[in-house]
Image 1: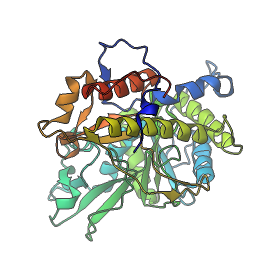
Image 2: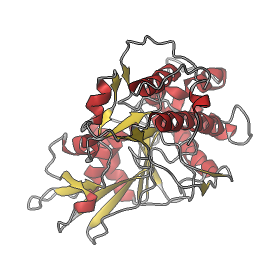
Image 3: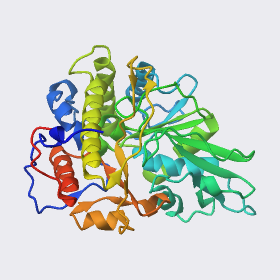
Length: 388
């Protein structure tokens, strides 16, 4: 709980007071200032004769994967200590969205007489899981709903998102029946969002360049896959779908991931995860102050854990705020905030009560400041908020 003095000293936004701010999507622009400073270190020149072939390494399970990217992915995981890489196959996709579908394809064995495999996740689950699962109308799999209430027999696949999107909590599998398979979506298991408490080693682990470094536009995701046959089938899906992944994007990702690994060797302003952790912590501190002052909303609280990467005790500072409106006459928080020109994502899309919304904290600084100003203005408690 904090006093008014800090909220009164926040920088006033330069955006138009009448402009609608979109905090529905997780476009990670908050890291842009860091990468602007690092532009020369991460600049890449590609000649006209490079990367003309479909193939990168025909002996690799993922034959379109550039060796440089594979090396940098494994190097970064070893530096951070968040996931095992020894004995794993790396499969690259056009973002983690493509890899989610590739994983479902790989884990479901085609059979003329079998029913579609149910795909489940514990609510609040990532809002795009139902859409991604049902989009192709595959006869292999179908969305099965909330893992907490799933009680059907037969095979199933559970998406385990940790830290969870939207509420930022560390998750474990819920359904543990004999015929099930678990896919661990670890897009946010990086030090700027949460303490790294263990080096995980699940069968199938998904990561994305967009949430690791903020480079969403490059459309690079990767999976660490223990089973070679599963990795082959995932590669087959990507091949049929897009005939591989852009090599220009792969090389750019390799360059940037290499810089991140190098930056971790020295503390200071060049250390990407250290800088990212400061940014996310500052935003959460400001948001908690405003929420406490307004009295209308509530936020999750997170336990303090020792981070194996930093060696320090800290709490999570998730990419999204899972916010609940406590005002009795507000049944739909998303609709209520839209009336204040704040676009968020409705709790219904995550399998939850519409009193909840997911708010992206990854946007530009001006958007974030205007969001805080409007939260205070809802209750009429804003008395000028400079230099918070």
